Amino acid sequence: MYGFEKNRHPAGGSIYLAVTGMGMLAGIGIIQLQSDSAFSGIFGEYFLNQYASFRIDYVQMIRYIAGYRLGQYMLLMGAGIIPAAPIWMGFLLFLLGMIWGSVLSISTLQLGFRGIVICVAGLLPQVFFYLPAFGWMILWVICGGSNRKKYLMLGAVGGLFLLFGILTEACVNPAILRQILGKIV
Image 1 (cartoon, rainbow, N blue to C red):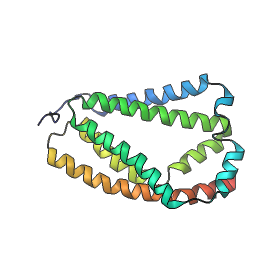
Image 2: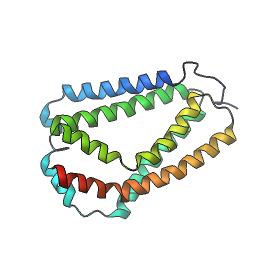
Image 3: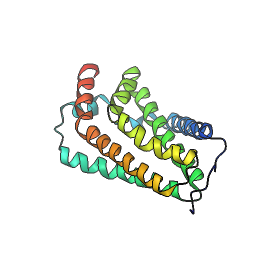
Image 4: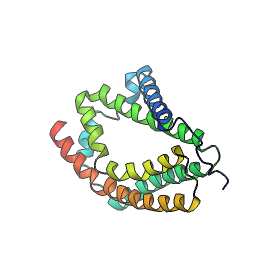
């Protein structure tokens, strides 16, 4: 049962929520300290107009997203079975918060409220599949789950949600973003 001790983190999820929030603040702070020209192309009008009219190779898109998301999921599952799982989970959530804070800050600086709308549209509809997949694994570690078979079963069920999230991110999300970009850019 190495790495599956009960009640490893008595403070529960509040510490992890705070760590994610600190990561978001760090991401926002890093972007605020950078020069405006460093990120000018990411959410620039030219880039967004090009994306709205770009032809997407869906097979290549699925491969790219699957590699990226599966890597994240395997890292999360691996972090859940080691004795230092709470520390690794905190580190991963801090990095996730930094990414969210950075992207939201860049989009807001470049486009204002339109940038926030684009960020929200960029999350839909795959977020409804990714939240359960990643959330169950995080909650397992936070609550100190100790049964290895249940952990692997939870990982497999989460993997199915991850698969649906990858497919919606690669095939449905670009159409949603094109519609949004066509209306606001």
